[in-house]
Amino acid sequence: MIPPFQPPAPEAVAHVRELANRRLSAEDFDAYVSAPMGKAERDEILSLVAWFTRRYATPAERLAWARRAYARWTASAPRR
Image (cartoon, rainbow, N blue to C red):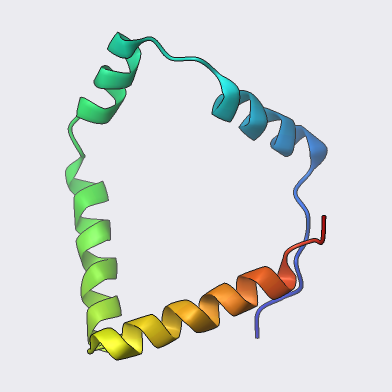
């Protein structure tokens, strides 16, 4: 069972907001998105994709999972 939503610490929210709202130059953006992916990161992504596509073998199963997950996420999110 998924535990109830625990809001993050205000400091964490402030830090993420600061990162999300920062302005990047075109050069900084290009450097970020063009950075090579490390082997460990690539292997982890491929492992997760392989697990997910084995667990939910058909597109219908994947869509059903996404709908259930979205319902869980929205039900546990704080109301605005």
